[in-house]
Length: 483
Image (tube, rainbow, N blue to C red; front, side, top):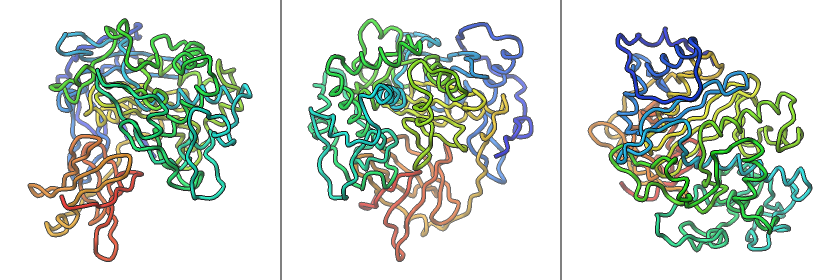
């Protein structure tokens, strides 16, 4: 994919805005000019043929999407080149965000937890391809009817264990918090964990799988809590000094941590949800610490000794399997891009690294509506520094009759994930998503659409003239009723 130069896509802003920002370090003149250009003009995630591209600054997009704070660490040539933060960690208390402000890493907790599990494999305490029930003693993966294939550590890490729980739920302050065994047994806010497809046969993203991983690590190492284990084996060796697997967050950490928001006008009750499933969603950290994690993997991929893992285990972690997923992160673009996103209530984040070049970024926000901004920021930084393989997607839209659009209306649901209500309103189709904001979906054909905010695919399944399901990216949602 050819990276399109910004100058050929957008008109320069005559009066670039100056968003309030704090930074670490002292970028040189050339780097400071790059930061100013990035702040001034966000590249959209997609371009619609025949329509002028939108031109907006970072500050404008934060206002439009209701994002109080954005914090970033940019990696260049295997080093953290600069960090910067814009906006407010807490609007009511008027606390500005800084590069040291901690955010919930959400699902980026998974690849960090995966590193601890792989360390146990290096040390001979765990095996990648053994049945995890041989180690689990507090709880056992239920028997299944899909043949002899077991649930293994490798399959937990790369989401091919065939398990049913997608994302794990959070709790409000004051709620009674479940144990891992209660979560896995279905005695919390998710159903009981089960094997629902043959292990190893397909990719099925599973927060439940990482909850099994957490119990596995605790059962294998009775002397340490999961938080202590991760601190001692991963966070401390990598210098991630502002990171902690802790839910709820200790009081002494709260002043340096961001408040989560549904949008800039609606903070989360209590400031943040509590996620007892630490391996799946429980890490509090900073972009700088996530960048340290990524830099360590880049250096190891180039032959340097890693502080935690052997070279063979780094190679295993970065080998893509089904759906381009490695043992913890997604690994795509021919094995060169290491990536994971995160989505907890009130927080959105992204970690992306080009392994060969040692270029990338970690970006963290405190708003449910920040996903489009995160992708725009990634494209804008990639364009500024010439990273290959990142560019706006070009889209063509078609006109549909109201009858064709109304035939797609309905409630679509997937077990363990959520639901989407497709409605035709004001001449447009909308997806009211339980896991994210309502978004317009634009037609490329009578059954293929994309979301206006971030160009994610939505594909409807028509069987003998009846719409029976819809794919949202890699997830199939069955049509379960009328809108």
